[in-house]
Amino acid sequence: MTRYSRQDVIRILHLHARQLTAWERAGLISYSEHYSFEALGQLRTLRDLQATTRISAKNIRASVEAMRRVAGMRNPLVEASFVRRGSHLSFRHGGALMDPLTQQLAFDFETSPARQLRVVGAGDAAQRQAAEVQELFLRAVQLEEIPATINQAVELYREILAMRPTHAPALINLGTIHYNLRKYEEAELLYRQATLADPEYALAFFDLGNVLDEMQRLPEATSAYQKAVALVPQYADAHYNLALAYERQGQRRRALRHWLAYVRLDPVGPWANHAKEQARKIMNTEKLSIVSRRGRLVKVAG
Image (cartoon, rainbow, N blue to C red; front, side):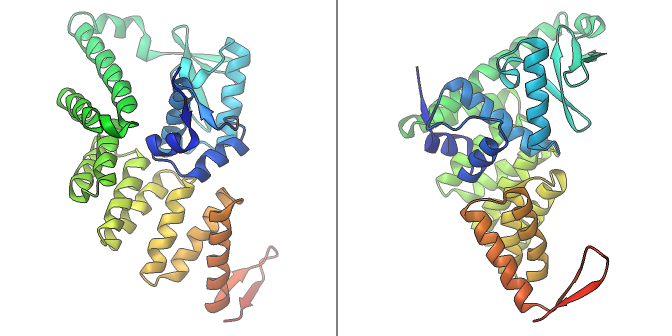
């Protein structure tokens, strides 16, 4: 069985090491030095959840654990599809949407008889294509991890996009291959296409910000990071990069807000220490006014 090291996972899913650590602290995954392909799928799901929803890691964990108890599933994030309902997740189970925390069921219009009637004929072809796209995508992900088969992964992603031009994950993964090859113009184009394909996909805006930053287009990169943060305020990495972008443009007070946001979201580790130090420097050099808990203004000496 194929196993993936932590560095493999970070590279394949384009994560930061601190993200794995944060998920481990939240109890969403167990610490490991090696991961199965199934675990890789779960980590991809967690990455996408972080980039597309405003649900906290604590609430994701609560929903997953409740679904395990209610439905007897070992790994709900892999074994079932899910949707955001308020501040937590509901899962599709037995033709209904189940909120595992309340154990309430809602009629699932995505799998209703009326919908099933509509997909007969042309719908069958659409379902077959969706299955084919999913299979191609998983194969591309596997090929992408091996340097010798990167070109094959590229061809599969292009095949997917020929079938579904708005397949945002394929656009992002293909863009990241170009990014790693320092083909920044091609990467930018693909990331921009991903933001158009799914305007709610914060990861697309985050990656767009990264490539624009590499191209020394800081104001555009800043706008992209701002969009990622607006879509998902809990997106720690986006706060970190946005703070860096503001500092490089001399906008230290704006940077301060995002250094502090990063520390709040990811308070432990070397990146948190750096964020704390940057925030401390700004507080010490800028004449800032802060409000105490009692509502009294306190001047911070410059």
